[in-house]
Image (cartoon, rainbow, N blue to C red; front, side, top):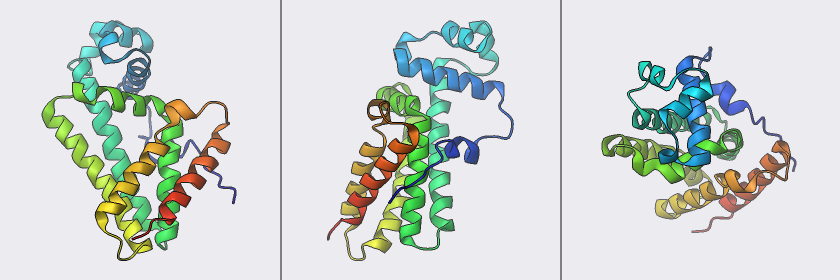
Length: 203
């Protein structure tokens, strides 16, 4: 079955109506952090990437740490909100699973740099914010577990949760796996592999 996924859906469905300067700074910082690491990027580097002096960034963010914190809180919150909406709007558990897969794949293909930054730099976020990020991520996982519980009645939640995390590893491989295939082909491949894995879960 060929699955067509609009890789721009993540941005179009959850972005603010008008791009603002803060969003431009966050986008530029994500690209730089992914390429050089959090500690390898200066405020001046980020400012240069958006066309003004580094010190001018302090009108928008208290510093690099605050910028990274907002970046990871934002993405965690948006994924959770999207997951809850997609699961609620679906007409059945299989439709909900397909919607969750399409939404996450669209994000993973559109923003591999955010995946890389999260993998590498979460420890640079202050502890209180890091706990909040992890809470949002747990809530997002539970949206998937709820859908999988409907598909696999009687299957223990820890097993469904482990399967969800394993599939996230596949979907979040885009910083390494995407490249040779075009976006649509890669989206279809990820969808087929992840869907097959989640539908074959046994008690």
